Image (tube, rainbow, N blue to C red; front, side):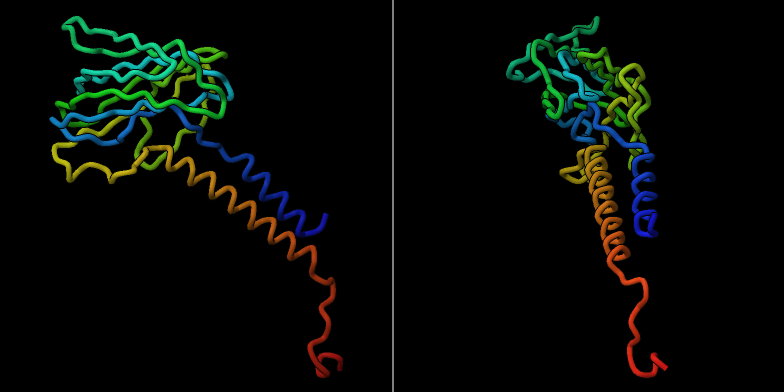
Length: 214
C-alpha cells in the first residue's frame, strides 16, 4: 500500500470510529424570559431510520403552558395536572418518516428561573425512545444510544431578563450537529486531496539545474 493510500485509509477509519451525535427531540428556543409569554417549538425528527407515530411531552413545572397549536395530520390530547393546569400533551395519528421532522408548537409562560426540563417519549415503528436522561451540558453533543436506552431530555434556560437570553437563531444541539457533519466532510476532502498529491508525484524528482547533475 502506498503512503498516500495508507494515510487516506487511516483517516477514514478514525472518522468512522468517532461517535456520531444524532438529532433528538428538542424544545426551542433554548432560552426564555421569566414572565414573558413564549411560543415553544417541540422539534421531532425521525429516530434511527424508524417511523415515528406518537410523541408525548411532559411540561416542566417552571412553565405554565396554556395553549397547544393544531398540527396538520396529528391529533393532540392535553394531559391535565390535579390542579387543572396543563401537564403535558400527546400527539398521535400522524407519522414522521425517516429523513423528515415535524415541529409542534405551544404557548407558555415561564414563572421560575433556572433550567426547565421537557421529558419526551417518541413512539416509533421499532419501539419507544425515551428522551428522559440528563440534559446535555451547554456546548456538548450526546452520542446515539439506541432505541432501548434513554437519550437526553431537552432543557430550556429561564432567565430573569431578556439580556440573558441566548442570541436569536440558537437552535441548541442542532447547530452543533451540522457543524460536526461539515467538519467530517471537510476532513474527507482534505484527506482525498493529500492522497491525490502523493499518488501523482514522481518517485525521483528531476534535477533543478546543472549544479544538481554534477
